[in-house]
Length: 246
Image (cartoon, rainbow, N blue to C red; front, side, top):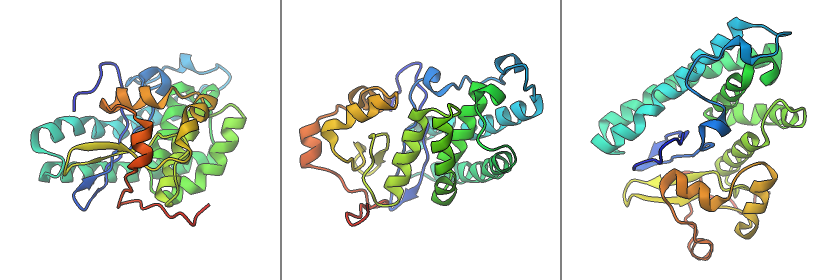
């Protein structure tokens, strides 16, 4: 798949039953606050000049993105169900585990830090490592991130991605439509189950996200057809929806 120029797509891969689940993060470099360079201490208010922590987060960000940035090329060259892709998935999982260990230590010591202490890039890295973690640490830090949004230390748009991912993993419908999947058998991209799709753009707007139409068009050249979606919702076998859960 060719990605639109200037976009940054954050993906987490799980290869189960010949299906790669790709979950998309925020789309633009500006919205993510990531720019693939070590942030300068000039980006942080002078009253908190912790260069060591800032550079640690920059290194974590590099490790988080390094293997993920290889995904598109490997899929194009070898295929999504190839030996090479499976090996890359293992490397991603290992890097995520190491990153999470470090982020756990940072949050346990300092709490959820905002850009006033670690810069915009550092704040985004904090979120992305949790977003790429397993369900248990995601649920552990969800209340803390909700409070961080209220305190202005985290973005509501970032929280929306985490809320959606946890919902899908727990067998519930997502709220904001941020989670998509790709089935390598038929090369089909689709939006994972979504609550009240008629009002999704209203909910997205409330947390600073653009329209779902533009989101999925930019990320995977997918046309959003709400009526087709409602009549043919694909129930992903990796994260089946449990309609009894609230």
